[in-house]
Image (cartoon, rainbow, N blue to C red; front, side):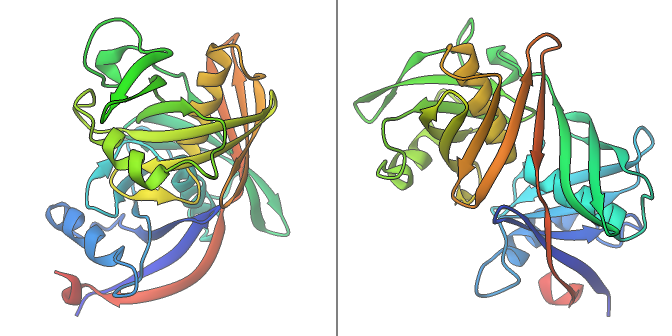
Length: 285
């Protein structure tokens, strides 16, 4: 009987099951189906996604992320903060600066430590990508403040990648907006060959926005780190926001800094451990 220990963690309510798979006890071939089974709420542990820790030949550690529907994501801003906290508090990494290999490249992470615990994490998210082919979005040139037709309704949208694809739409009142209706339609819109994450953004002030996120492969979540970054960059490109911005999400607040001189985005926010547990792998394969 193979017993797999895990941590249940979250970043502002965006929750994950984190497994140390450096020994590769869990075969790659079952990761997609395992994520679907473990993330199923009420019938299993329940989460927005599954995080897996691996050894890396190019960074301190490697992270893989699977959404609740079993699809693998390139990058996750909330997930990488959880993984960094796990690495430090489990004694895997004993320093406050570490590098994490992801499908979106190597990310640099800084830990703020108090009383031997990680209180918050800053992630260098790298540079935003506007090239349609690299996001990906069908068509030519950039997709900035362009028309997006959804079931006969027209939205102004801006698309970019922050390691994973995002479609940003600014709205008057995000709380009353029909995220659950338009979110899945835009996620699977014909423009997006690999689907997309969707952010609905309300500007409160140039340094404060409210965001609701429809995450690709998950649905509406309480927070999305890459979505917060993409929202601020989109607002800045359109001349609507400051380069430093607080992003209010249903699960809490993140701070985003867009260093335009170096074309880099920095994400600052908490990560929390909820509990530790063990499951028997045979029951999920």
